[in-house]
Image 1 (cartoon, rainbow, N blue to C red):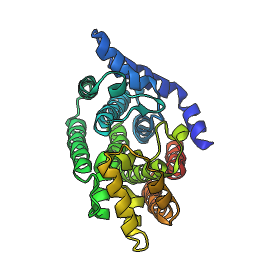
Image 2 (image 1 turned 180 degrees about the horizontal axis):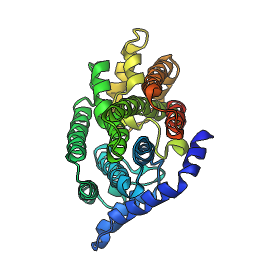
Image 3 (image 1 turned 45 degrees about the vertical axis):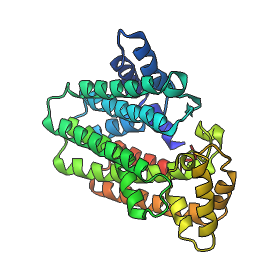
Length: 324
């Protein structure tokens, strides 16, 4: 698999970022240290740091400098996961107990706040106002995206535009600035920053759509959490919105969504999953994801044909076709 080859070539730099991630959340407070390391130790694909490292190769690559972007972006992502698990009442993530499940909601919220703060502390090592403006704006937008998701829980009148704007804020923006800020930290040209931002945005949109598809089609073993988690919390994703446009099942689907809402997510969602899986709705969502991947790759066409560019393209294809 090309993704494994990319990670193997970058093994040394990724390991360095991993050590810096662990070091960045160290504290004398034992519980805060334990809760902060809990999710970190669960692993993950580290897609955002990898995008930072690859994008930096279009400028003056300096790992000591670029890690001050790679580490904060992964920390911000981690903090949002801790907070998300509180909102979602999630018991597991990546096959492990969530912070809220192992401790409680209050500890989880403060842990997320702490990780956010540490992200900004690490980024402050770089004396470039653009970096801090981009980071702070992204955190604001990310927060708005989370609030919008809550606002639209179980809302069957929402539009495709509502959904796309929400996933832009929740997911795509952080991936976009991972690509952008890697180039900024490496002092690449402004035109390069803009191209990499566009690439990251489109990949990020595809990433979230694919994530939403997997929640409907995957198994608990593959996902590290039960399938149908989105609908249990009231999050209507793209395949569901596509299904609601189908007059053949709309009324039955509305009834099923209402049944889950009334049960506060504490019910069997197998009938709901079956309705979505048995129609063309997954395929429709997958087609939109593929269009975003095509746009991402097209955005890179004017960049020099270096190894990093080919690696970005391979990762984009992996994201568009991933099954976990």
